[in-house]
Length: 95
Image (cartoon, rainbow, N blue to C red):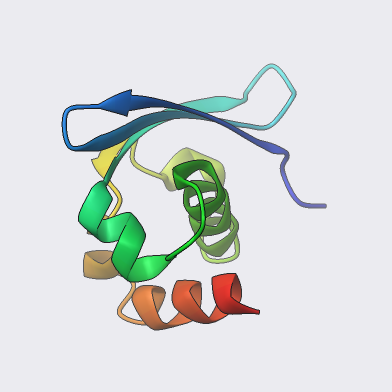
């Protein structure tokens, strides 16, 4: 069963700061993800920061448990850990 992902984004200096809660149970995790304007336009043109972050967490949760996801990071960091991230997320958000 997939963990529920709730995303809330607020504008920041050069993009958005998004708070992500993964799970509804007592062990739910919370993460803060920074999304730059350029990254949003490059990875998910026409989509919102929240849509990009939600899809990115779906990608991450297919590969690791929620407890292994960094608690605070800039979105492009995912590509440092998973080389197929950018191609895959762009494909998913285009479909």
